[in-house]
Length: 92
Image (cartoon, rainbow, N blue to C red; front, side):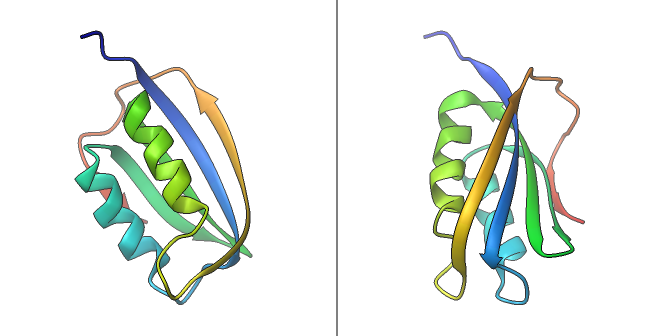
């Protein structure tokens, strides 16, 4: 089976800071075998992931809801070519 590798930058808007979103995103990304990072930025959370396209699509769907303590209003996703830039997933 051919693996399609990709990269995505996900911007998550709503009540997503101070609710464990970054910690939960790290757990989800690691469970999906994705590498990259998550960080708070002004009024939103930004997630950059690399890995199998199918797994990226799964974390995008997860970001639409987030952890039970979050209230996601909107997300924006930009897909890019895979770079293999990361060896793990971290909170920044």
